[in-house]
Length: 132
Image 1 (cartoon, rainbow, N blue to C red):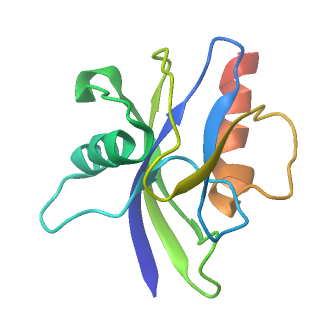
Image 2: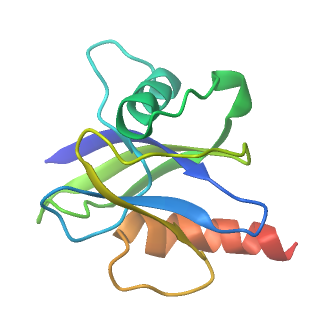
């Protein structure tokens, strides 16, 4: 089974990326979530960010990082289809809804509790962009 999500990589000026851990899970992932029927990925991402973090981000403040396939972080045996946007907008997220914890993560450092999408795809892309 494939889980489809849209997420946003919030990148601070120091290069750290916002990651979140949902209640009852152990892995940190990019904030975002699953689409509602007929919803476009950018609309899913902005809606989920508002619901989970209280951050009202405009679609015009987002840039498409890519569409990626990975292993799901918290659902064993499931694949993940993720549309990931990136922004450098300065935000002050507040953990709410199903978000238990948030953390600003250095994408150049390996952390074993990061989701496969972050470890294997998004963080290497962002770390490479920071070096160029």
